[in-house]
Figure 1 (tube, rainbow over the protein chains, first blue to last red):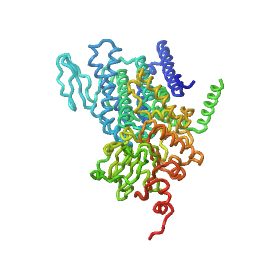
Figure 2: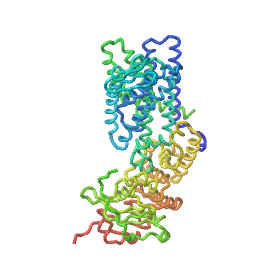
Figure 3: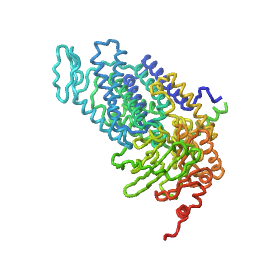
Figure 4: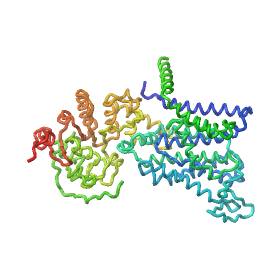
Length: 352
Length: 283
């Protein structure tokens, strides 16, 4: 019976439950939005939620599956955001269809972030230890400074760029896209909730299919025991790179989605705090647990909006809620309680 | 890895390895040959001037008191450490510029004294990781679930169960490796090593923590593995019943020096060995 049949393992079940959860959440929110039942504040949060959920999933691939700490994922998000926004702005007359323009921008964002991932990964992922955390931390800051000093303009001849000082002399009909610390103003909002949902689904498919394949096994083997992985002939650097670059590319796509849902983006938005915020999503949701990351990212993105009535004390309440959630999820009594419930559930499932 | 370690030029003096390999392998090239192998950690010489030859289907033993450098020899053979001196020839090929991964692909698989399983993964996935380099599909085939993914995964699944059946563990395939009892974890490590299709299997204290009946079963299985896979086995073991029972050739180390080599009978009666194990009066 066991042989040759498609076995439905626990992992497969969890994966399908995760897909289902995202689809249900999307359908509910979309129909509420169509019916005009969503508060306008929440309505505006839909695209950022999708972007942050994708970010959390991407970072979970590095932190939970590969087992390396990245403290600069906002840097990859930033690379994707600016690359995507520049492309969207430059091509907005050439490609009138917003869907196609968005898809191209996301791909370009992902590609640029992947290149940044390769550049960071090549020297660092050869080393063992916490070097990735240190280097990505620096990478996030460097990217922020670089983009803060970058000027990009477009005219009939194409893209022009300059660094530190704006020395671009644009031809007739030209316009500035990125002006250093001012960021990119006047972005045409082409990101939609539907696009965000599709991006989350694609991200989930990529992560789940990667994890449940030969390459994914090798990546998790590195996390569990590097020396043993080497002893069975697994190339350490290759698989570390694979996981890290995939993670960076997904973060870049999330960044592009985020940017194209805003009026203005500035580089200082993607700072160290942002990286830590995304890491909080991952840790709170559980390392390697994708559905946890989705819930944590969505909840913690909405929370500051819901806490608006606390006005000045908003961030204080946010911090308290965070601490409470951490305490509760680690509470032994509560853990036991949920443990017995799932055990009973399993028993009844077996009996049936 | 580290370029600071100075390697002395290989001494290819035609010194025949002093130990004899079993007669049936004698006319063939030995699977493993160490010549003057040695490593220093700072001022400490952990292994010195080790000469060893292992026949293609030999079960060989490496014994010695605690701290004699036995596991260090395994780490040298698998390139976890780079040797300071000497040469390792695996099937006639010098391994001096290989790393751990490449040595495995060239044909050495090992188990560890302190078990190193992928404890968060299932038993089957552990074996499939052993099969890693024999599963032929890439990252994109996996992400897009192309036909090669299904074909190769099915083959790997069947092969993994087949290998697990050596130790009658196929029913545990879905269990988490870290949750297995100690003895089963040791056996799983052997299966994982075998999955890499080695020419030489290194077992580091395979019987540690096993009771006499489990040890007896393990002995049978080691011989069975050697016969079915037609490979050589080098094992480190403190359980003398196992070593004397199945090893054809034994090398005894003490403080990094080779103090005796020979058949089990010769080793049992060697005064140097008795002195190393039981202590002897200094003259």
